[in-house]
Amino acid sequence: MLCGARLSGSNLTLPCCFRRLKLLVFVVTAPTPSGVILRDAIRETWATLADPKVVQVTVRFAIGRVKDEAVEKSLRAESDKHKDIHRTDSDEG
Image (tube, rainbow, N blue to C red; front, side, top):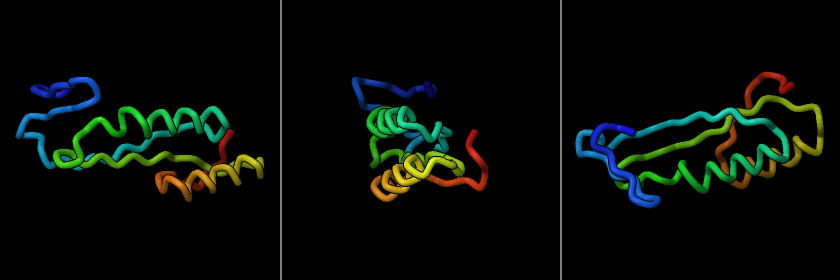
């Protein structure tokens, strides 16, 4: 944790020298049904801990191309809903 930062319940308080921070966090997750659960958990927990008046946290999930059309359709719907999925020009394994 940052020097002087305090975590109380789900509230993160930063010292004045860290205020007005803008953080961009890229998270790589698997394009699978369990990946949806992980991304939702991140959206609902640590991605929202900071007070938006103090620190702007932007989370983006990096996911490559998938061959399974059902998974691709699900990813497009999730991306349309949350606007936080960045599609990369690479093939997922």
